[in-house]
Length: 336
Image (tube, rainbow, N blue to C red; front, top):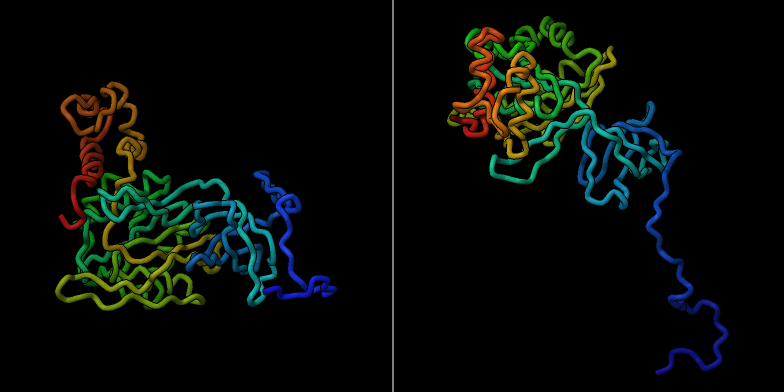
């Protein structure tokens, strides 16, 4: 049945243009040379909160980026509405080259890696000395990920009022890792914050740790104007806390040009993505001794040249032990 007459003169009839009239597609993408530089502060369901100069801008990833995802800490190029007004939305068209990357997998046999933080200078591994008990294997895994990703590690030991730090510090003493020891009382009166801030000023620091160790409480004390909900109770049966931080968030450190990045509490830290040969770079005193190693040496086998190198007095035997303990973390679970 004909909807309109044979000689209709209505000008609102919709017509579909023929293929010859459509604009041809092209693979040439705009360079966006006029794009503004931004810093990704947090990511939530495809929406990215970015800092552009002194404005907080909401943005989405451009389709041309494909599956390449931006993470907290990324430096990005942004176009569109950069006013930061309510309901405005900009577009991320480019992710700049990263200087460091903190990655993890769900487990050691999981081939799908997840980028947690980009462009951080150091990784602060927060560990309670009690309630919950320290998990050295998880600490080791975080250290390996830091070394492999180009981050300098920092140990932050909390709740020293419940247990002394000596035993744990002895375990990591030969790694020459800077550390800060805090108590709950010192965090409440602010005396511990000065020691922590000395390690953070002028740097971008990612904080990691399993739930209940006081990580978010520490971040809240460092950045009081941007309070995050603190950690939940520690389970009396499992000795582990509940997750209360569900997404990574970058916060400007008060009175400093440094940044802190709070990340969700860890239950596991898979290292499927880590090449063991990268870990040796964190041991410059041992690295020259690997020149005589066989190809693809794991540095923990009978033919490893490091044994003779250390025996000749070129390095401390405790350093070799520490290296091999870290290399063995992929063979052990965190709770072992």
